[in-house]
Length: 75
Image 1 (cartoon, rainbow, N blue to C red):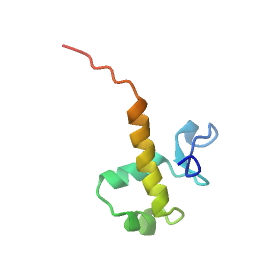
Image 2: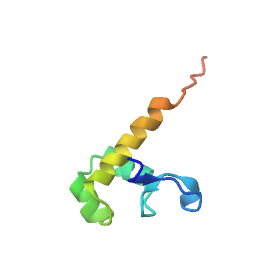
Image 3: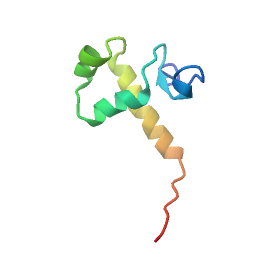
Image 4: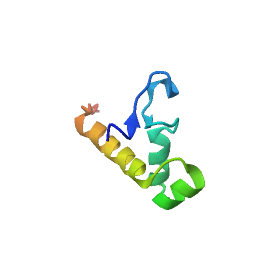
């Protein structure tokens, strides 16, 4: 996944992007969350990425959530 997702402080304020592009992972995930098929994401939104890049975005999000500590405020 590291070869597909990169964090560069000089691109989008250090937000994770698809490697070699300025496409934020969050933007790709937004489309996935809306149910847009991968081939449509590539064709209509981001022709410079591949399906494997989209899968890497999803894996990245899963990994980040897996290590993140959630603090739930009570009443």
